[in-house]
Length: 339
Image 1: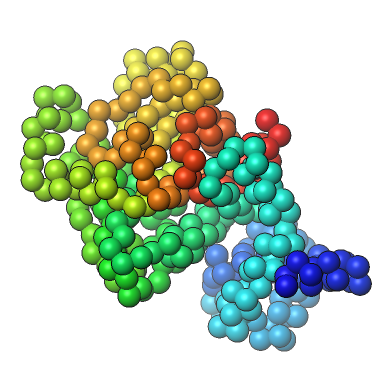
Image 2 (image 1 turned 45 degrees about the vertical axis):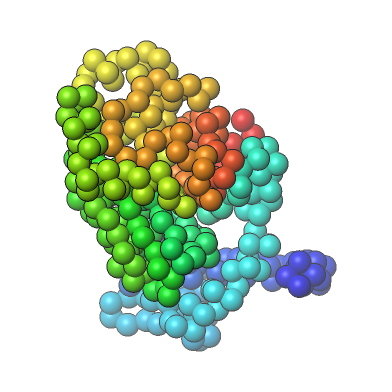
């Protein structure tokens, strides 16, 4: 239905498609930053205040946004319109062509793409989280176990998940990174469980420990239980990081940083550092999910946003399991398709 409607609209009123995309994007930006002032919104969209005022007045007259002293927000009618329009927008948008090309090139389960460069527009990270949440929600079934890694994008997923009748269990894929508590896998597993009305487990173990500590920890009943749940889980949520950003978050020594630099490290996931060819250069000794565990999952939902991660994502394509759903921005998608 959507494709037929689009074909007709392209023949009769192609300019209407551009107008629709523009207003849909405006609603998305407002939703991601609400409440937001006109001046700030104009700056984010790179529009003059005069042009933005005209668009805002139109959306307000249609009842799609609300304006008060706090700023601009999307109304319930606006949210409903966005939900109903999403399948049509996907059909119109060039992102569907990019996703199709990437599926053909890399053979992964699917690609989901947001417009722009998340390094330039930080709100796109929220959009990636929302997209990931929507796809994950469709996969839930009674008794499903979901392994969750750490990271800010993963932390935002909980903002977009909805309560479900299915009995789910969220488990941390790894221990703590020593970073902000809210971005650690334990906290995120708890947050996603609360959002869906589900259960969760906690992994009482640091992410990076010495061999003499690692083996005894593995035998602890609570740690062993989470390890076994990770190995048997149905779905995995994780991010793809730029190698040296992640190394610094893990407080890697200068010696190791030098070795990674010398070997050409570009990316990191699950404590594995890899080069542009996807060769594993270093593996952090850790308790939790391992890279080799991913092949057996029903689906692996991986995410990365921003041009600074394009090399890391391209390298990850060399080792990504075929059951991967990749959530990226347009900048990375174009780079993958053309490189």
